[in-house]
Length: 112
Ligand SMILES: [Zn+2]
Image 1 (cartoon, protein in one colour):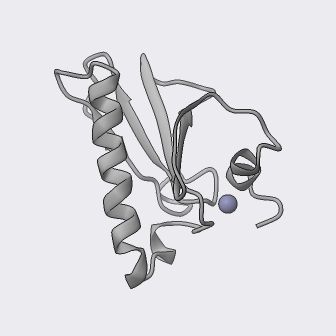
Image 2 (cartoon, helix red, strand yellow):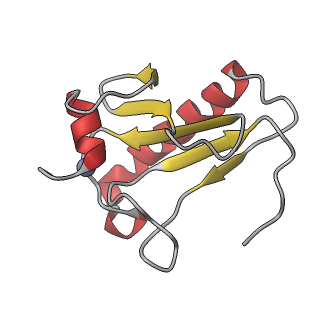
């Protein structure tokens, strides 16, 4: 996707503060952190949203959750953390490339 911000980050056209990378997945710090730890984990393959996942993406999404868990551990989130995926307009999705927020480092309020 040519005008996708996250695809540009993957290609290195937009700088990011990377915290994890492998063949299929990239993780970087959110530029507007909402918590002491706020990391975005994305597939390198452009998938627009959760709605656009296909059956053969199941392994990839599973791997993303392993990366999220490992990053939580590496960042010392011993007391817990939150994983958020926003889908579509009503879900508050801002960038149309599937991403998961890892939030932690303080007690997070309960919000819908
Ligand atoms: Zn993209």
